[in-house]
View (cartoon, rainbow, N blue to C red):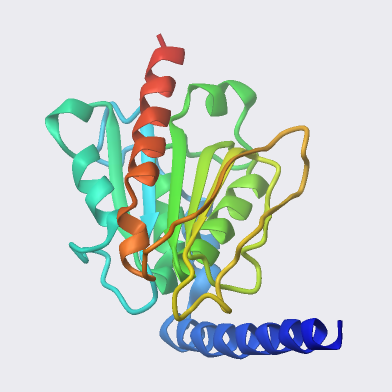
Length: 240
C-alpha cells in the first residue's frame, strides 16, 4: 500500500512540475490571452468571409508545434475538412498560446450585437467541433468554457494526450467528449480520465488507451479521425 501511495505521489508531482513548465511557456508566449479576446469577442462579426459554414472545426496543436504542423493529426483532419467534399465545413487550427485567436475565429461565425445571443441565433449558428492535442487539450477546453459563458453549445470535444491543470472537466455546453491517451514518456503528465460538469448534458463517447503510440503519433490515430468525420456526417444529416 505504501509503495502504491509513493508511486501515486511521484506521478502527481511529476505531472504538476511538467504542467507548470509547459503552462509557463504558454503564459510567456501569450501576453494578451483572453483579455484581448474578450474585447474582440464583444464586437464579433458574422461577415467572416467564410459563407455557408454550417459546421466549424477548430483544432489546437501541441505547445511545441506550429498551427500548420503537417505531421499532426489535428492539422491533417483540418486539411481533409477543407477539401471539396466538405463545402459546408470551415476548418482551422491554432497554437495553444493563441487559443484566444481560435475563440475569435469561432465567434466571427455568429451574429454581432450587444448582449447575449438569442436562442434562435444560437440554434441557427454553425455547429462546433473542437480537437486539442497536448497543451492544446487545455487550450481547447478553455475555449469551450468561454463558449459556455456565451451560451454557445459545442457538439464534440476530443483530447489527445491532453496536458494541463484545467483539462479534466468538460463544461456542460459540450454534448459529447472523448479522450485518447498513450503510455509514452509523457504518461505521467497526460490526462487519463475526464470529469463532467453535468452528466445529464454531456456524454463521454470514448476513453481510449492508444497502444504503441507516442505523444505525436497519437494525434493520427484513425479512431480520432473517424470520430470527427462521423460527427460531421451526423450533424449534416440532423441539419436536413
